[in-house]
Amino acid sequence: MLTAQPVLIAAALGTSLLAQAVRGPLVVAPGSCITIEVGTNAPTVTLLDPATGDQTSHPVTPGKEATIPIPNAPGGTILHIRIGNGFAAHIIALEVVSPAP
View 1 (spheres, one colour):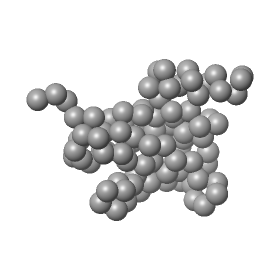
View 2 (spheres, rainbow, N blue to C red):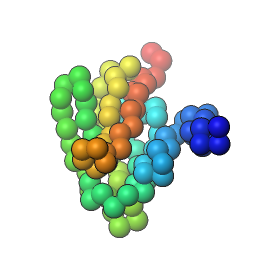
View 3 (cartoon, rainbow, N blue to C red):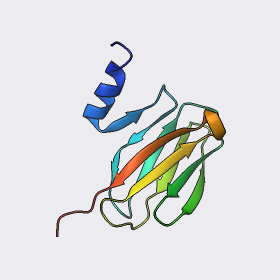
């Protein structure tokens, strides 16, 4: 179970860890900005809202980080961050959580 431990630790910390390919939060607030750490040499990171089909592409800086603005989506919306294409793509799911009224 040694391979599962980093994932369990990342889940406990509220971050994603996919074979050192991408690191970032798992829960986001609507209208906020997040920073994703990219472990691959991908030039861009894509944000996809499956509910609307909207896609935005964001450049990865030489420091292997990408800043991504989160749309004003309702709470409970699941957004996808994709790095790479095809079978080599790494995808993390982000849940949008709205503050209590």
